[in-house]
Image (tube, rainbow, N blue to C red):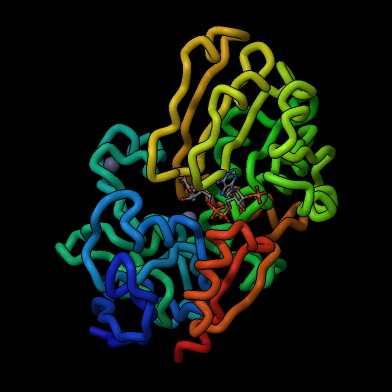
Amino acid sequence: MLTVNAYAAPSATDPLVPTTIERRDLGPHDVLIEIRYAGICHSDIHTVRGDWGAIQYPQVVGHEIVGVVAEIGSEVTLHQLGDRVGVGCMVNSCRECENCLSGDENYCLNGNTGTYASRDLDGTITQGGYSTHIVVVEDFVLKVPESIPYEAAAPLLCAGITTYSPLAHWNAGPGTRVAVIGMGGLGHMAVQIAHAMGADVTVLSQSLSKQDDGLRLGADHCFATSDPATFTELRNHFDLIINTVSAVIDMDAYLRLLRLNGTFVSVGAPAEPLPVKVFSLFGNRRSFAGSGIGSIRETQEMLDFCAEHGIASEVEVIPASEINAAYERVLASDVRYRFVIDVDTLR
Ligand code: NAP
Ligand code: ZN
Ligand code: ZN
């Protein structure tokens, strides 16, 4: 066992505090990663605060992890000492269900093993990336392209893949009109990726305060959702809407913005249900879909796509001691556009 420094939530209501956790001894296919940076995803906040259900405490979260390979198990072939690597939202899956066999292990029918707050094969609860080291089986470890700085790469491991996957699946590209609701961590990645795919991109943000950034990141248009005129002007307009909002929104108002055969995909995961009137789906034969992270193969594809297109996350690097303050700013939609923890401040 390796004892490592970490930052943990002691309960659903107390601030996160410094602590130590144990990492397992390396198995033959395991990789020990010395973590350099860990992004703060809104899912970390939902999880520690119990928005999605009760969890065990203390809990270390963080699933946007980048670092360096510090040690490898005896049979590891995919990674070498010193490699720049990343770990996202899952660290294993059953490997034998229909979805795992088709390479869609993020949709593992037995539930993939989440990077945190998930039951691991040895029965322990997984602990995430707000820590100095992590041990992960080699085929759930991604290669981080040289051209992307570590801190700007970390958010790609969740925010990047979670938006790349639906954009790719629903064929965002030249001739398609894509809207992104919410310009936070996921939203600012969706804008960049959809633009690089060739789509016409619209940001739907609560106000126009992020308009300059949106346009700079590749959006063609920005609208404020606080202005009722937005919903009349954009009626029957989009082929694809990617919803990244962490709270409940007026689904029917947004569904009416889809044109014929358009799809509304929620990656945002509020604590409460998103209610829909079926009549909002009948018009224009609209679809309401969801999408959960992406497979390992697709995550590597996304990292290589981002490197090729010069895309990365816009980050605000913080020491671990500022995690609690960063949580409050994320909750206030005051993030530009991802907080990333400098894990050296935990050593
Ligand atoms: P974030 O950085 O907080 O961004 C969310 C954005 O939504 C905010 O910046 C804000 O953008 C907008 N927003 C927030 N509250 C709002 C409200 N009450 N009404 C309207 N808009 C609001 O969060 P994130 O890390 O991108 O995560 C977004 C959501 O995706 C979370 O629920 C998270 O758990 C979920 N998620 C899902 C997956 C998946 O696999 N499906 C993966 C990762 C994250 P504006 O200021 O531009 O309005
Ligand atoms: Zn996440
Ligand atoms: Zn499976």
